[in-house]
Length: 106
Image 1 (cartoon, one colour):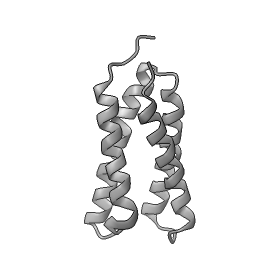
Image 2 (cartoon, rainbow, N blue to C red):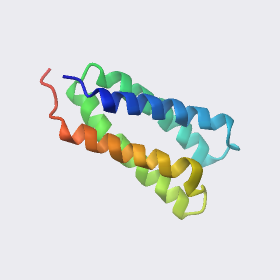
Image 3 (tube, rainbow, N blue to C red):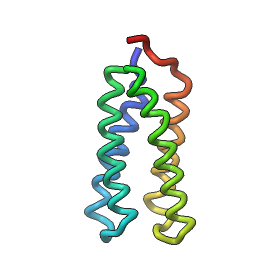
Image 4 (tube, rainbow, N blue to C red):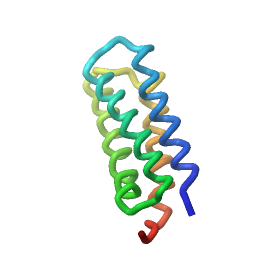
């Protein structure tokens, strides 16, 4: 059984991370955001196949992304709204979704 809500959230947030590039002036946090967007999109696609590596990647990368995003806000590099807080909230929901599912045996 696939974790479709997590797949959909990762794909959607990945697309929005990349889309933010056209709406925000370029900076180091923006480049990091875009890279995480591509990674989130890749993880969302990989979760369709539900291997252990994809599931563990989906458990680790959103946590790292949330910490980096909040760290950039704490350092004054980004504002909390309108982008960072919703992205961190999606990261937390994805983490909850993938931690409640057991890895599929492959």
